[in-house]
Length: 106
Image (cartoon, rainbow, N blue to C red; front, top):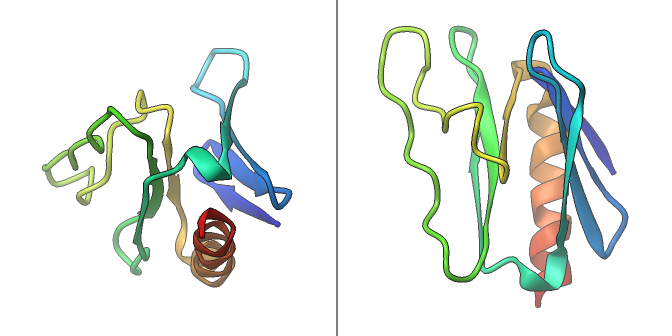
């Protein structure tokens, strides 16, 4: 399963979650998370005005706080390696991916 995010993407192969982020002017970075290690997921659907996000919570770490402000729209910061902002067109694919991760966790 793949979803295209804002400056990156998320893939899930049934066991591993791979988050690829590309900040402006930098090389793409990949973060791999085993689905069995995920203790929680957070999904905020995007709207017409603001991007949403997907986030994976790991043991021993708190979820990144949502940045508040007129341009952030309540998303975790770009520097958080366990989350990715998504556009509105990716809402359905993100919901399916999160459901698949939740099923793999259990």
